Image (tube, rainbow, N blue to C red; front, side):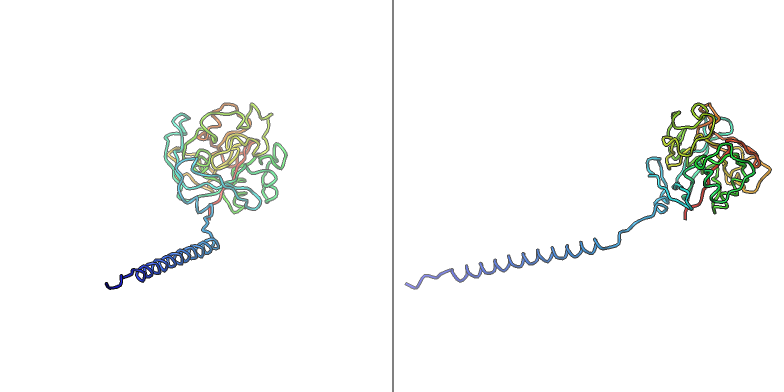
Length: 290
């Protein structure tokens, strides 16, 4: 009988082939791991992509909650950023000068003072005015201000007064709030006759009254001059003039000397001649975002 044929050589070949495949898989796995490690190191050391708040503010907001307040100091004065967006200006529940309700949109962000201009900053930055302040204190809002003097001080800072539409948007936001903080009057959020001790308070003394962009005292404390002429609605760019001294200009926000809650609605407006001044007339400034 011929000798029995053995399968040993073929089995050995299969074993060697499988061993080689296993080694190749291991090395391939190690290679993938090394590649991932290298990529991870590169990504870790790579400069992260960041966006400035002003770039973020270029995206229009559609609700107050869609914006996180951001502030920055310019020449030692804190300002808050107001992003692009739209809101409904005016009210059907207010006076005739608040009607008709009209949509206003902002295609560029802008900055506004977080606080009403203080006496300390007004003096430090070279402000000039004819009448002495009714109440004295560096952190008190500057008062007895005429519109002309407010305009000149903002320009001295390289800034400007807010337009009426900007003021109301910064106070109400796209949610179209009645008051800067919400739709219900809250006495503790306002410096007004009931709690003012018959004088203005230090700026920012009512943090609960902050608007959606972080601006304080937009209701109460002192009236705030804006750049706009006191005209009928709907508001338009034609209402703006920094040189017209023969027409009344708008003031917003109410003051410490007023009592009725309606004066502190974000839509309430009055007009006074630009050379008028009084113990509760103040202001804040604005600047375009760069």
